[in-house]
Structure formats: structure tokens, C-alpha cells
Image 1: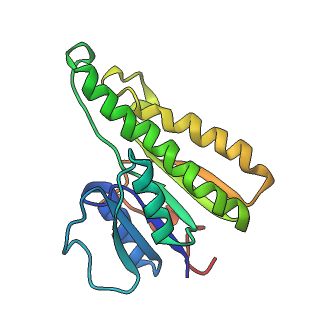
Image 2: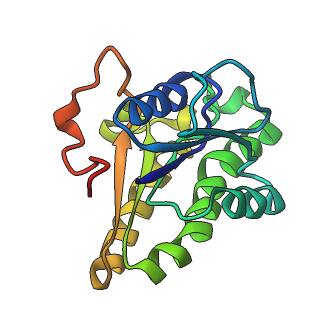
Length: 186
């Protein structure tokens, strides 16, 4: 059985992504800073773990508790909309710590086990708005795209892959054909 670890599952895209993978027969490790009871059905294929992508000890504990991970979905993120000049630097640092450095830290944490098994997929969820135009109010969001490209180039010598997904995916817009290679039978 394939296992997917998804960050930021307390609401939104992370929650729906966890439900989607579970409905397809995957074992789901749904992570969030503060676990919320009752978000998922009782199942031996869903585990909810506390994980803060800005805390190295939390990441290490979460990865250890998860065991072998076939797919990492870096979904945890903070959205800030507003004028750049009116956004406090402390807020921008928090956003970068979560959206950029948290994604990098989670990726670094799972790469060794994926490299050892010569198998794995890393999906970085980003904003489609910033993919098509400059978004000074969403500064860190586009950082996941070059990271995904670099990982893809680096992983050509192994079976691991990296993709960058759009956060516009939801239950209302999901199409199973969009993830043709994500079947648990692989």
C-alpha cells in the first residue's frame, strides 16, 4: 500500500487532498500544526500527526512517526493578500518560513529515504495566480516552482520525481485523470 504525507491538512486544499488520496485507497499521513479531531473518517489508513514545517524537531518527529513515504505533498502555507508596503516584515518572515523554508525543510527530510528506495514523488502546491504574473503581495509562493525544477533535474539519476501543482485543485475541480500515475497499485 502506498503512503502519502500531506502538510497543512487542517483545512482547504490539504484537507481535500488527504480525503482524495484516502478515497483512492492510499494510506494518508495528514499533518497539521495543531491536530483537529473529527476531520477524517475512522480508518486504519489515516493518521493525523502534529507537524510544524517551521520547526526542525517537529519535522524529524513527524517523518520518524510516518515511516516510509511514497509521496510528499508540500501543501502547508500562509496566504497574505494586501499591499506589500503595508505588510509588516515580521509577517513576511512568517510567510517565508512556512511557504519557502518549510517546503525546503520537508523536502530535505524525505529525500534520503526516497533516494535509498530509488522511488518517491514530491508535490509542491503553489498558487496559479503567481505562476502567470508578478505577485508582490504573494512573494514566496513562486519559490516552489524553481525548487521543483531543480529537484526534477537532480533526480533524473534516480526514480524519485518532483512536480509543482496548482492550488486550484479541489473537490469541485478535481479530475482523477490529472493524477494518472498516483494509483496505489504502483
